[in-house]
Length: 74
Ligand SMILES: [Zn+2]
Image (cartoon, rainbow, N blue to C red):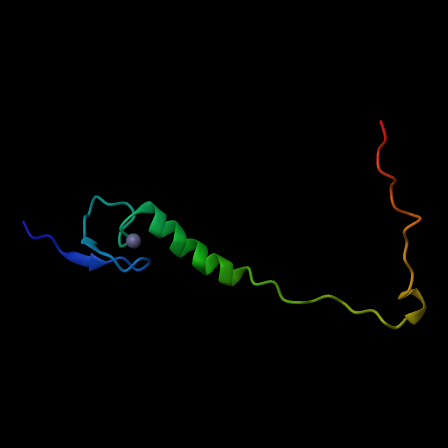
């Protein structure tokens, strides 16, 4: 029986390629999840799309503190 050694794409640790390993080509579930999370983070890059509405410059100084809900007192 020949056991091929491959490198884990995540931690780059050499491990035996096991056909029964559900996480291959990763060495472990953790490394698989890390890899999945890595590309997920790239996908989730939130673009700064805050609409700066300065067409009505009158409301820029408006502190609506009076409209906030007062802290609950017991
Ligand atoms: Zn690994």
